[in-house]
Length: 503
Image 1 (spheres, rainbow, N blue to C red):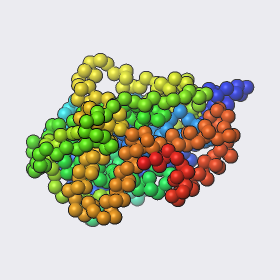
Image 2 (image 1 turned 180 degrees about the vertical axis):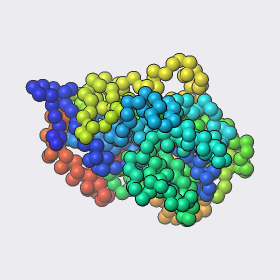
Image 3 (image 1 turned 90 degrees about the horizontal axis):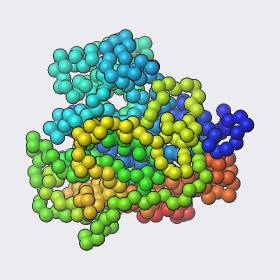
C-alpha cells in the first residue's frame, strides 16, 4: 500500500491522500483507557454520567495523532477516523428506517460520543438528553416489563439497536440465566467515549465499572501514568464533592468535533457547565464541607484575574492535506466552596480520506485553520434556545483544568488537590509528591506552557531539514522522530524534547 498517493498527473499538496486500511489503522492507533470499579450500580451510573462531558476535554488535552500513513494530517486526534473505520451501518440504518425488527430513529457509527445519560439523579433534566436516539423497542419493552427503570432500559435498548460484530456459535444461545456471553458480544462491539460495564457474570467478584475511553496514548510512560492517575483521582473527586457536570448531549457532540481541531487545547473553547456545584442532589446524604474554603486557580494570584482568551496559532504554513480506582468513602457537598462529523455510512477495505476541500472527517487542512460547519452548528435556533448559554458558556481548557478567577470556575486540578488534602493515604510522602508531579504536567499542558504530543510531532516534522512543507513525512523524518521519542524515557531525553515537558 502506498503511504501517500497523489491524483494522477497532479502534484499539488491539496490533492494528497492518506490511504488507511481499517484493520491496520485500528490495531496501531492506540488509546489510553481507564476502567474504574465502583461500589454499586447506582454509583457507577452517577460516575458514568459525570464523565461523559469530560470526554472531549480529555481528548483534546491528550492529542497525539498527527501522522497517518506517511501524511501529516489536519487533525490531532484519532477519534473520528476510528469512527469511520468502525462504521458498518447500512443506508437504512443511517436514515433511521426499520429493518427486520423494531428500531426507531438513526444510528451513529459504533465509535462515537455517548448518546445519553442514564443515572436517576434528579439533576439530570430531559432537555439534556439526545431526542433522536436509536433503540430496539422490543428490548426496551421487555426490560421495562421485568422491572428495569426507564433510563437504564433505554441505555441497554440503545446498545441492542445494532447487531454484534462477532458471535461465536457456542454463545448464540445462553446456557443459563447468568450467562452473559451474548450480551458481552453486543456490549463489546459498541465503542462510546464512556462505557458502562456490568459485572461479567453473576458469579464474578468483579463489580460495576465505568470505562473512560477517549484519551490518546502518550509517548512516554510518565505521561500515560499522569493522565491515568488524573482520571482516577478526578473520578473520586466527582463522587466526593457530588459534582454536577450535566449539559446537553448536542453540546458535548460539538465539543467532540472541536477536540479534533489542530492545537484545540489552545485554539478552541468548549461549552461546559459554569458551576459544577449547581443543582445539588436533594436526595444526597452529603455532609457539607466547612464554609469559606477558597480554591485558587493554579498559578494565579487572588488579585489577578485569569484571562479566558484563546491563544491563536501563529504562522500559516503551506496547507497540509488529508488524511481501577476504589470508590469514594463519602460524599461532600461542594456548595460551600467559593471558586477563587460527519460520518461515512460505509467502510471499505481501504479507507481513503477526503481531500482538503472535504469536511467528511474533518481531516483536510486549509490555510485559514477554520473547521467545517458541524451538524450541531446547523441545529435550529429553537433548539439552541432551549439551553442557556450562560449556564454552559464557552470556556478554555485551561479554565476548566486550572480554574479561572474571572469566570468563577474552580478548576478540576484545584478540586483534585482539595480532595487529596482530605485523604490521609494520599496526602503525604512519596505518593503525594508523585501525584503533584503528574498534576503539574497536566496543568502545563492545559495552559499551553507544555505542548501536547500532537503539537510536538507536528513542529518536529515542520522543522526537519528534509521536510518539504508538502505534508509528506518521509522515512528519514519519521526515523528521526521515533528516535527522539525513544529517548524521552530518560530525563535527558525529556529535556531535549523542549516544550513537551515544560512544567
